[in-house]
Length: 365
Length: 194
Image (tube, rainbow over all chains, first blue to last red; front, side, top):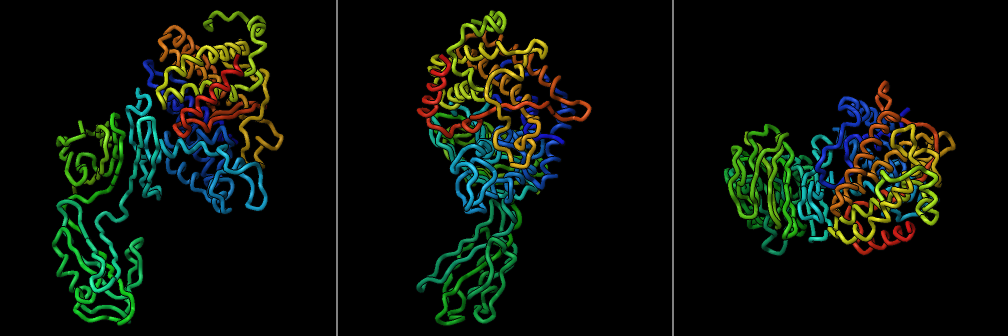
């Protein structure tokens, strides 16, 4: 039997994870790399055997997730954070709670300890530093040098994060997401008055719309959260829906349509009913983004933004606000950005000053 | 006074009857030094380090009186203080249900080492390189002892023996608190340490 708290604290010491200062002298080896790997494997196995549940109290919980992520078990850490039954944060949430409890136990009817209590909430630091990815860089003080480095969420089920922190130098914001279907566009628009709301479809840079997978002006069923769910409602569907959309959009990088009768043949497919335009399309060519990151760095600070490696590192193309800043391994100078290069693991490191940035990473096929 | 000048537990304690932090187990008192480091880290206020460093060093002096000779720099596991181990783990866990508190020694060792490292870096920030080196050397010695005592190389995991300890304050790190709240908490610790 192992105790998660002991593994978390021991590994935190061995990995020197808990210091926040730059150090001039390297920390001596406490246990070997192979022993660190064994202890980490034991810890991760224990969490998995407990069905992604914790055995820690307020001391161990601060270190558990950080240690798992640092030793290659980020997926286990995220699954443990998301556990929705006892003992875990989802258990509190499922009991209608919006604050943290002092203890893992309790129900909405029977309180164990106090509520709105930070006691088990120390993984908030893990969420900001590792999952969102914002921290003070080594050697920095008071957010003068910032590291933006999101967790590698590949195969974790985590697809988007948004986090903001007010620091001594101003607000730091980070929002990143993994596009679900990199090449697919999906949009809906509702009929309004005689004009209708415009629906704009736009492919990434250098790509064009190669197929219309679904198009219906009427009362289609489905949602863009799951584009494959769309289906035509035969009782209300403009017969020229697909033809009109194909004529307007195919082989173009962008197109705009309106949800109204005149756009789709001039006849109302089902008079008196509110109608909707739904389109699912596919882009081809160009470089389809696999990771999107928006961030704001306080003026006066500098930052290193790390985009996680996606696919073959040498084929990475990085854009900022639609302009290519890194391609074929070379930095293309842009205002506010001082360097872009491959890091030692194939991730992309971007050096920038204060400001707001919209980075996208794609891999040339 | 540097740590190297400390002469034995009894004579050291004689001068520290009023140090209220000594009523608290290591993890409780550790909050003082952690907050000191975090405040500087996140807000860049060196005056906070200057104001509180001497009391923090005095607290480490006090704890040093309880360092065991036979564990090469780690705190004794039975030094005074209220002990509860890893506080409020899930019920049904042996940690809470009256069984052996296996986490106590690892927690004590961890926070002792952590305080030495934090204070070393605080000293470095204040330009006191001699103290910085001495605290860091103590932490290095203690880390070796920690691995020797608590890492089971045959089984490949950390484990310790039964004792109860009490711990608190790990949730306050990062920039979630306003500087004024940090400063207020540090003042409270400062007065306990006088």
